[in-house]
Length: 290
Image: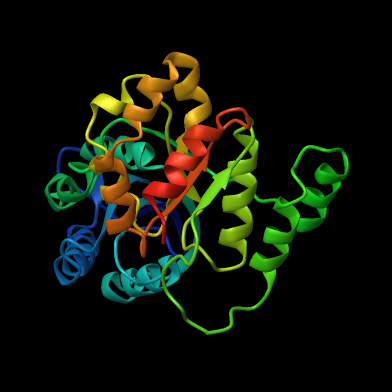
């Protein structure tokens, strides 16, 4: 599940009419046309993708978008323009799911109403309050420079070189590998996800983080339920700082490993394990032998 903010700048302002009380409103026919176009899209993609307006003025519409199928944000916005019969330029930005939640609340104050809370609810019911981030763009040259200062292990750069090579099979799906990163810095997770995303190995630059802090008491399924085409990072560094080795091993439970196997085609899993916790690294390897 991938979330976006889309900003649609209209070529022509939405026409206004007076309501007889010296108050101006959007032309009713145009408003219905926009609402119907978006509603038609949502009905055609029910439980797969959804679009809603959360802010508006005469010249610009701000839209929240959730995609949970194999279509691109560009295809979604092109379809929205066609269905609403609007013309304009569109910019899009991937956002965390918590931002989509905020947008859905803001939608109540917009001028448009087509039961957006109903169509969005299916997706957001799967999203607990979890730590999410969008990987910042970075170049391979910048990563090599960091490695020259000893910030990354010698095994990391060859893996990045492999990632940037063209795929042997065009259009291949799934993840041939997951990762154990033997470092203490979270920065490496952002760099890895960024390179994978930039080179088409991931459809999303978003990653969520399991880092202890009561997370082990939650249902891990909530992480994987919204992580299709995204990444889940299990930060053993943070977990180990909060609990002893026995508890840390317990947090890395069979239910977590079963979810990783179940979602291996759709969700990339990264374990961040400090170098001194060899036993934990071996536990992960033994639990995910394939």
